[in-house]
Image (cartoon, rainbow, N blue to C red; front, side):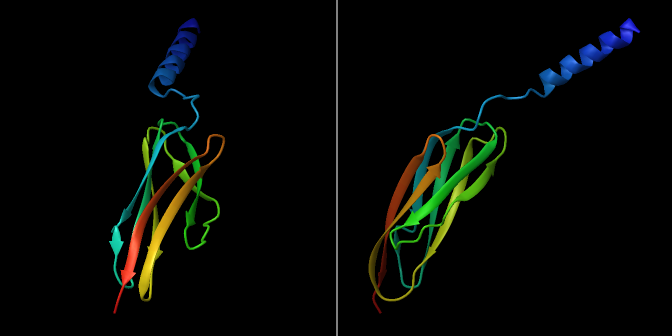
Length: 127
């Protein structure tokens, strides 16, 4: 019986070493944004991407997009896996019609330690 107990304890210890539980909470270390293309033509779509760097802990990012046309996405969520140190959050913005528009997009990360990032691009259409 003592041998079985010793084997059980050894197996439990091995499992803890092989599959450690992290007590760290998800933390954002950096947020950067890009918009492509920087100059958008007639009836085009801009791809705005926020790249969020994390500490690698699992959790959920809460965020929202704010656009210079007054659009607010409301709260969105993205699951982050353990070990995932970079999360890409894309937003497509469609434009139609003639004229010139200086567009600005902001991503607000929500939570205990909020962060923001912004980018800009120009829509130009002359027909």
